[in-house]
Length: 75
Image (cartoon, rainbow, N blue to C red; front, side, top):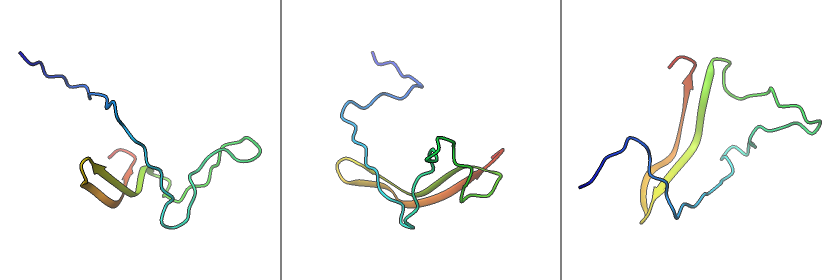
């Protein structure tokens, strides 16, 4: 008997790939003086931004290829 769950099943053999954005931008992070950066490329109402996202499932199944989009506050 199988049971279904609404929770994701963790992957045991998960690999993470980090790539530089194609425009040469670096991720926002703490400033050298320890304060957080307030500078952003997205408009003020934008809450989530994906730029150049690629997702490949094994074996070699391309799900997303260089996808970019923004989700505004309230969407």
